[in-house]
Image (cartoon, rainbow, N blue to C red; front, side):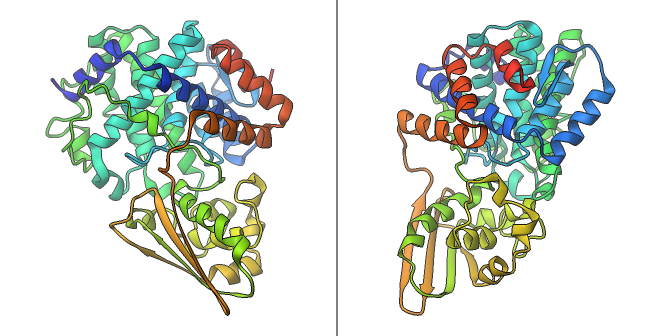
Length: 429
């Protein structure tokens, strides 16, 4: 079977475990939170302006606007807006942000098709799982050469979620996946610019579009994913794994949520620094960060020029953490913080080295002062209970939205994740 056929079969036959659905609920609440919090960002205003100017038959909700829009346009806008703050979940198996690519497509179609909350959540989970599996199939070579897995692998997951909610046949789902193979795109060169969140919107929009076209009868190459000139071979995929097998594994369960408003690659170092900071006395002479080499091409901007670029700078975020500037607060990532002379001076004392033997989720930080040396290692893969994760995400929602809005959001999602109610939250009703 081709990869598209295997994924189509997975969409039709998979029965997600209850534990995975519970984690998906948490990611849904987190996605709505960061999307609501990011609805006034410059890129959010730009993408909404374009979508609203186009018009069309509106059935789906947008973050920050009361007017329903066509599902493809809504997916584009909501994917972009929810990734604007770079504060959404990450999966390190393929280094991608699954929720911002898949949930906008799933919600837009769920609203349009009047799907139930249970069907919406199941389709979203299957789509997210598929995006991770496609990412594993593409492998690290795809990411390292410059493709953004959130956008590329994410487009396949968005397609699967949309197609399942449209109740497409297995053959139609396979066609939709082979169609999105020619639409999937997104480059890491956009990191630190508005183009990065736009990548997530493109993935979500592509998923809705290709599912719609398959339903209307458009045809596609029989193996658009893996043939000689298919997506995988032409996009530097390793294609060594077989992630589409019905193996009973749900990779999604190892999703990692953000508690710092910057690139997830910096988070292990920031957690280590949070333990070091209270122990520091005297002037800091040197800060040494050791991380996996994968991150040096992602979040090692030495001298960021903007708040967006600060999100991808080990040196500057380390200086912030040791200077008492909260890396969890949205307002910390401003152009003023990027050009602050004291932070720039401290950032110059940071060196970043790599260790290929280190886990991609880990970092070690050594801080040297005139009188002391403090070293701490931290690994984001350290297990956290569902209760603890829920509590941390609820606190994050309260910090970003305010206590009343956060409580209402979490109560609504716990009661059933009804797409129409979620849409009302996006619109601000």
